[in-house]
Image 1 (cartoon, rainbow, N blue to C red):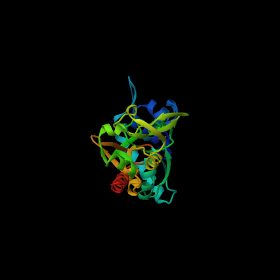
Image 2 (cartoon, rainbow, N blue to C red):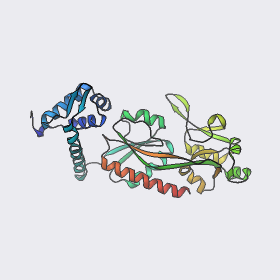
Image 3 (cartoon, rainbow, N blue to C red):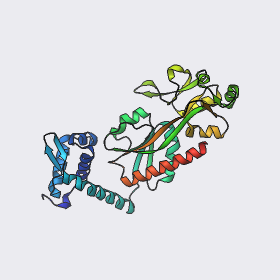
Image 4 (cartoon, one colour):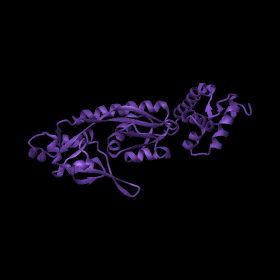
Length: 303
């Protein structure tokens, strides 16, 4: 060994574990935002200090060796132990940044803060397309997604439940419709509050997963957040299609009612995404449990 275990750098361990997850040196370099040469040097240093060949060179490039795969869980455990020791010694709680579409952010961030232990949470409201686009930029390390979107290889996705969506309108409008159950033909005659968001300085159409495509709807007001859309529906003759858990407060206050449309039964999967390099496995498991518990509570309140 060139320097012995006392000279092992934590940054080199993290670099190697990134290579193991990303599968190639080039992919690891992109995720770590360093050059391939820096990744190669870090792995070579760790190999010399551990006395083990962690990466094998083949005709297709560099791949993690059998020995490297065998050592990776032990190195992960070492990092976990160091993080745990840091918390026990009274170090400041770790900060994790949470990104989610507006209604998920609004509903889940307070719930998670109440359920998670010594962790500081920061939050960003981001449209789903921006969550996917910025996942590799280090802006956030936790996210809630309503579809199994592509994420960088270091990210871990866990299914945590499903979110039901429905049509909502004011009590006055429901009375005009003759009740809370209508046909699809009748739904086409309604005016919808439409979702939108701003990306790159341009206005883009949002997605609400309504069975009635935008091209077949009468469009009325437009809003960036589901909460503003629900408020518009409560004070106008327009309707909004969106998550039942988001509409829960308006329904409980009697300001909106769910309108059942024959043949419409829409739900979307909910995923918690975590940056595997920045969120330790123990916290990932705790966050999954917290999101599931929060979703159950929000669904009970929305009934």
